[in-house]
Image (cartoon, rainbow, N blue to C red):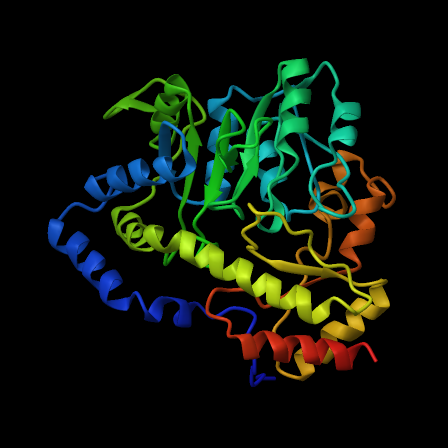
Length: 377
C-alpha cells in the first residue's frame, strides 16, 4: 500500500534542494580532480570537522559502524575485555564490540533521558571491564560528567557513540559548553544521509585528542598499512571516507549550526502543542540537537494505536528502537533475557518518533500535533 504522506517522517530531497548548486559543484570538483580516495577533500573535511568538535584529530572512515569498530581496535580493546554500553540504540555498538573480539555488558538507562544510567554503569564495572561506550541518543548527550568520573576511577577508556549528536554539547563542571567528541578518549560519528550532518551515501569518522591513537586509526582504516603494502597493524580493513562524500559533507558542514537551531525550534513547537496531553516529552536542554523527536506514551497499547492512527492519516512516524539489542535473537548467547534491563524494555514498548527535520513548517508540526490529539481521544 502506498501512503500519501501529509507529513513524511523524513524528506532528504527537500533538505538538499537549497544546497543543490553547491553540492553539484563539489561533485564536479572531485570528478575533475582525478583523485577519488584519501585526497584533498578528505583532508580538508577532517580538519574542519575536528574544529567543529573542538578536538585535534578526525579520521574519516567508511561508516558510523566502522567508526565504532575501528575506535575499539585503536583503543586496544580485544578478546577477554568487557565494554559497557546500553541496549536501546539498535545493534551497531554490540556488533562492533563483538567484531573487536570483546564482550558487551549492557546497563539500563535513565527513564527520562533514555541515556546510560551512571549508577547502573558504576555497578557493572568488573576487573574485565576495559571500556565504556555511552550513546548520545536522539541528539542529547549522555551524562558525561558522571560517566567520565566512573571511567577515571577505574581506568577505563571512553568511546562516545556520537552518531546522533553532531554539534550537540553539554556544560562541563565550569559551565562551559563541551561538544560531543570532546568528552571521551575517542568518539565515533556517522554521516548516514538522515543524520544531522549527513552525506549522500555512507560515511563516518572517529575523533580524538590523542595523536598516537589518531595515527593508529589512519593505519587501521587502510588494511593496517604504515605505508603502501607494508602492514604493521592487525585488525585493519578497507574503511575510508571517499573524496566525493567528503566534498559533499564540506558543503553541508557550515549549515549544521543553523540546521540544529531549526530542529530545536521545531522541538519547541512540539513541546508547546503537546504539553497538555498525557505524553512524555523529551527533556530539553541547550545542547540538545534533536536528531529525533521521541515521545513516550503511557503503555504499549496506546503507543501502537497512536502509531496506526498517525500512519492512517499520512503522518510519518517510527520506533527507535522496537527490540532492545539484548533481546535480539542474534545475541541470545550473551545470556540476557526479558527482565534483564527493565527500564530499557519498558521504554521500547512506549516510545514513538515523530517527524523532525529542519524543513518542517510550523503548519506541519501543528498538523502532527492535532493528529496526535485526535488519536488519543
